[in-house]
Length: 343
Image (cartoon, rainbow, N blue to C red; front, side, top):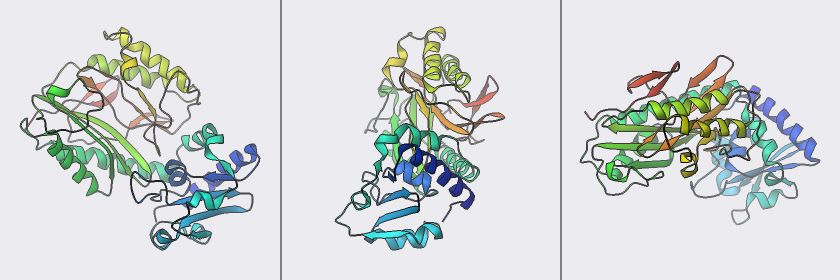
């Protein structure tokens, strides 16, 4: 059990406000909402499957509907004692969400739930620092020893093993060797890394997802893509709207020397935390940005991309996916990852 009672009380108050505004009990059914609300419990067995529990939040308290074959493990290892006392066991052949109905579905209050999750609380910030730092360490460990003749799949295997050894689920591991650098989501192949390669990871522990991109091999001029990323950072201030931050970052491509429409060729990232992007920023995501919110902007153009998990605090930006052993450059007061030469 890694949860914090103080954080949980605040989350219950936030959910109560959403519930009262919606006019009825809420049914939490997504990995991101349940893991956030229950202080980082593992909601899955299969990474590709639905959660093994659902939460019905009502005026008289929370009820956890849990698949019977998962209940003992969750009670013994993951749930806070107060939550363990409110478990209803559901036969494995009945979806927990179905047993918890009727209630207001997440889809009806999606924006309000994102707003409830956005401002991170002290205990979860502490957990996020740990997982993000260890994700960065795993990348350093795996990529320090790679070589140009190594395959993308061998590289992905080493990265995945380094993450798994730290208790981090490798949700996404992408690798692009020099011959595939034009692909924005390069699923690993048997191709070689070659002169320059990109590795992208999304790793999850305690429900929180750390996102990072690293380059190995030959260096290129990163200043233009750093300028675009900085534009996203400058615009992602508490009190502003996400669509405005998105527009400001996209507008920077042309100023940095890229095609002005480069932003249309790949998503640009956005807030992160219990979902890889929560939500993915677009021109129609009008979420209000808040203090202690995490972001993973990922501006990209042919042959270049930059991405880290960062936290906007009252003092400024804090890079969470950081490892001092990885080479870095300072850009506008922030340490940003540089290309690591082959050993």
